[in-house]
Length: 121
Picture (spheres, rainbow, N blue to C red):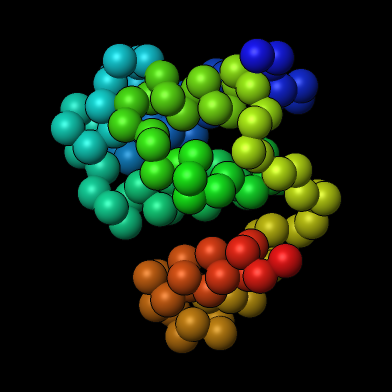
């Protein structure tokens, strides 16, 4: 397994902490995303999509669907690149704002649109 260049594991930990609303000190490799950190299925989807934006890459469902712990996330993002597809850098903030407008402000509809766009290519 080779490390993914340009990805700071500490930024990923901070992102998980912020996204799930838990103290950074709880985001440790053995912490279970659902049981220990309280993520529900929508939180899981939002976490994956946020990490895709943060790292400019696509994370297939076959990869993210196996994430149970913080360690699983860290292994796949920082341990090896198998199954992950790098995307060109684009203005994701502007893109996301447009999707929210299209979805009428509905968070779940926005997430579904974004997921469909990434899978469509």
